[in-house]
Amino acid sequence: MKLIKRSVVFVAALALLSVGSVSAHEERSYFDGRSAADENVPPFSGAVIVGDTMYVSGSLGLIDGKVPEDPTDEARAVMDAIKANVEAAGFTMDDVVRVQIFCSDVAHYGAFNAVYKTYFSKEYPARAFVGSGELLFGARFEVMVTAVRRPAE
Image (tube, rainbow, N blue to C red; front, side):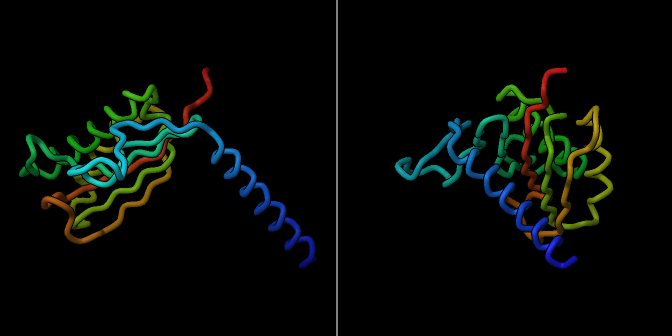
């Protein structure tokens, strides 16, 4: 019995490795792409698309460069920024499969959720809501997502 379990795990691991190697050979495109040759810019790209998968960097909900006073306004601003990036690349919010939210104070969990759930019309993506402590520029939320294009219906 143990041999069967080990075989299943080994086959699953090989399948995962082969999926990763296929993706490694696919063409990449960048949104707000930056490179090490770019001077005086933050060292990351806004998003990278590999095949039908989009990886969006962490976004903040700043309005005119400032953190809004109300956590709900900040949550809306950060989700609007995510949505704009996703849609600019031809994806939809319902293509989002994974979300990571970093929050400076988990007391804002309810305020964030009240806004967050309005951005999806199908199943919610897998998600982590992490109490992170202090975030850049005094933000309450930083959100990053992964989207996979759904097949045409």
